[in-house]
Amino acid sequence: MRPPDPRTVRSRDAALASARELLVEQGLAGLTHGSVAARSGISRATLYRLWPEPTDLVRATLTRHITLAQPQPTGDLRADLLTALTATHAMLHEPATEQGMRVMIERAAVDPKFAEVKQALYRSGTQAVRTILTEAVTRGELPAELDVDLALDQLHGPLFFRRLVANRTFDLDYVRAVLDDFLRGHASKPAHQQGTS
Image (cartoon, rainbow, N blue to C red; front, side):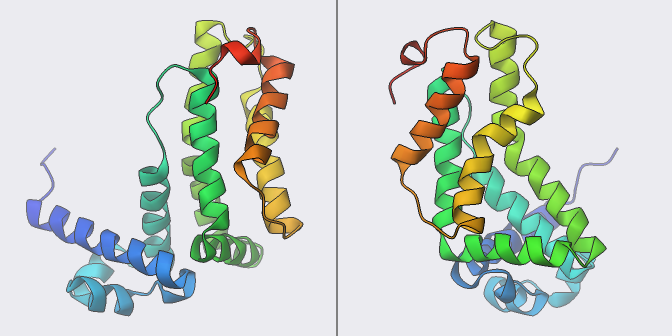
């Protein structure tokens, strides 16, 4: 398999960096091939070659945004989960990304292409926490029978419900309360031994 052309890699990275800036500044409405071309200096033809459909560009940009926000696990269960959920808290309170999530959910209900993007973003957005939980099971800090999908719901669900459904803001004390309630119910070690971040 041939390695990717370095020029293509540079163009893609420059375009996605500009697209991420536009996402933060303007939300999904500002994320178009034309606006990315103007911001990045990359031609529209190149952008359409890399991401033929608008949804392809949206998915690539949001995936990059999520990936850059996700931390590398350290092996400290509570600290790692808190860091990951803190990143989720930030995205839910960042006006452009919060609005992007609302638009994505709304459009996914009526547009199959956006439904596919939403599903891909769910996988990307929960991968860090899924990895943390799976590794904690391997270490014996969480029970072997842990339902990881349910655990993801228990950790992320309250945050998304409070912000996107109840339209309420919340602080990191709320995030810690959700996390510690989860650990009290599942962790093999007492929560206070999992770290004190």
